Length: 176
Image 1 (cartoon, rainbow, N blue to C red):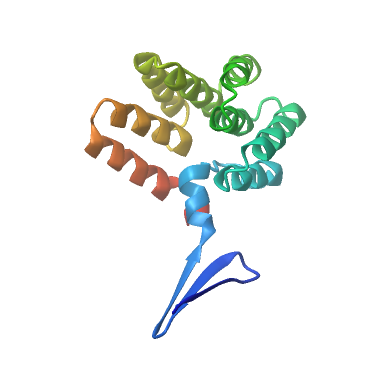
Image 2: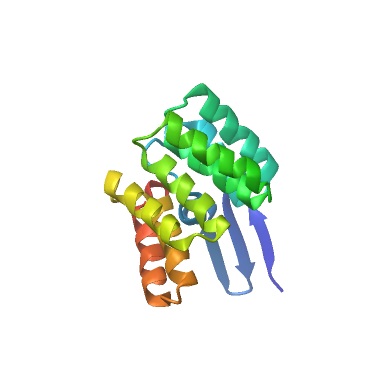
């Protein structure tokens, strides 16, 4: 018989008769949340946590608020597009991706946002180009690496996809 509990630090602990496993949600948020350079932006971080918890509507609202407060924040735009796509609001996500490129043109987040929108449309070459453009702006941008991994996986390049996902996980500041 095992038991599960969550402590004040956000860690989930599993107790099995002779073992105690302790997992932190932070590295998972790092892999799927793509929290980039500005960790001080607590609104984006909270939105990432909502996105990871599959509360897509809440995440989209928080990302939208963060993007409205700071239109040049590429991370907020990228998260907004991801949340809207996950919530199956494709048209809104496409519009947000276009707006991201207009308001934050030189950010890796805006390029990655457009890449995710193109990926949803099924335009793999364009999506790949957008993710590569994001990586030119920031070679260590986890969202672009994950997006390129999705494209690689769709093209049956599974080893490349795995390597890109592992690199994204290692580079994400939350995972450290």
